Image (cartoon, rainbow, N blue to C red):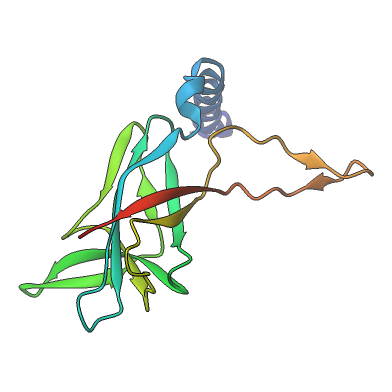
Amino acid sequence: MTIGKILGYPAIVLVVLTALATAYLVFSDKETAHPNIRVENATIRPPAPGQTTAAAYFDIVNDGGANELLSAASPISQKVELHTHLHEDGMMKMRMVKSVKVLPKQTTKFERGGLHVMLFNADIQAGAKQIPLTLTFARPPVYVPARKDAGGKKINVPEIYTITVLADVEG
């Protein structure tokens, strides 16, 4: 086998991959390239009597490209975590997750027995009807071009954004 034949195959693969990447950039659906997220059906279940942990449930509706939920926050709790339920050794167990993938063109449900948000030492005032819940996502809904400082040097702009919803208090 000659060197030309050995190097020919990687070169062909490189050309094909470059053509595919170019086609994707030129012809991709601009509306789905970036997330288009809204949060619906947000509720908070107050702590049970004698307990201090509340839970939040909601639907993340994504009409655009992929994203990732990184965290949640609320003024009623200093410690808020993303959680899921797992079946492990015949038992239902709750586990913290670092983030949740939000797939394109899909709804990600946070519900009892599945993904949910835990609010520890929750301080829900008597008679409260709604509570703010802020969700932080990895990608903004639109392209953010790189910014430059006065000297023309590129400034790194974090690609995160938040959505704050008013969650209805159950009960």
